[in-house]
Amino acid sequence: MSGAKIYALYVIDLTPFGSILMDDSWVKNACAELERVGREAICCIERNAKAAGVEAAPIILKGNPAEKILDFAENQKVDMIVMGSTGKSGIKRFMLGSVSEKVVRHSKIPVLVARERIKPESFFSYSKESEKIPTSAAREETP
Image (tube, rainbow, N blue to C red; front, side, top):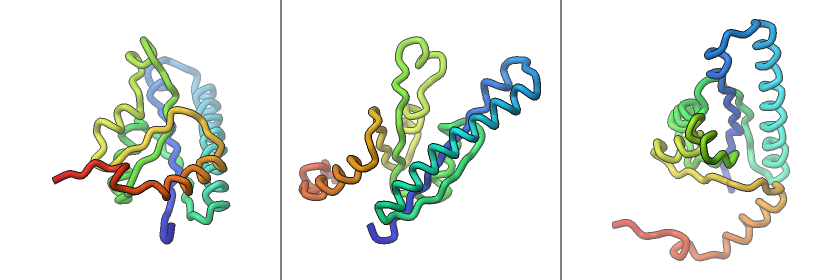
């Protein structure tokens, strides 16, 4: 992975805070907690990438998650977006939408959505094993 770089992006969705009248101090505390959780998540990714010899840049943004992810990917000219899915279904998915679904539908670059939580060690082991698979078997040729 010579020259590879991972952007560990965490987007804080502030939309719910603008739709309901709330105490300013409560909103500030909630935002601070979301930032803390985001920092933990991206620091974990950064540590695992470093252990694998890959450069990682931790970034926290605020706004509409799907829009921020798509804009960031386009501006940074990334090769692929890899993201998790919370697995919402039914009415929750209908009401809230799915960030990963929006990104997949609107992205101009490939998107990989991971549905299950895996240990970083097993991901890197799996990716090393997948290098043994011929690319022609994994990819459909386009004219």
